[in-house]
Picture 1 (tube, rainbow, N blue to C red):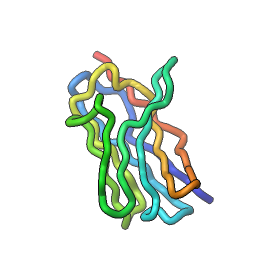
Picture 2: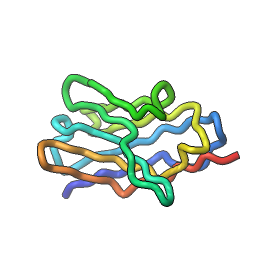
Picture 3: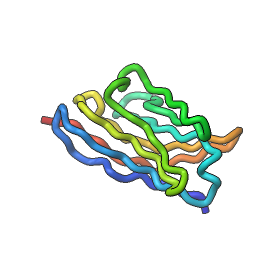
Length: 116
């Protein structure tokens, strides 16, 4: 059974940090590109960050460059999103995504709320 389980979301003040985790099971994690998406109320889901399966290449949305860092531990089948200098506009549901060829898996999401 394929599972992507996100954790680490919560309430944080502007300027704070959170670390999201995505624990994967039921598929060959190391051959999948891992990504984090987010969706704020009334807005479309958007790509936040992506990590390639082998070379370790990463890509980021312009809005999070320099503040967020995606990483993966293939030995633990886990992807991470370190979020620093959080802003009010980072408030959203954050989703973990795994892609290989035409196969796509999604997690259930974890809520991140940035509020003073």
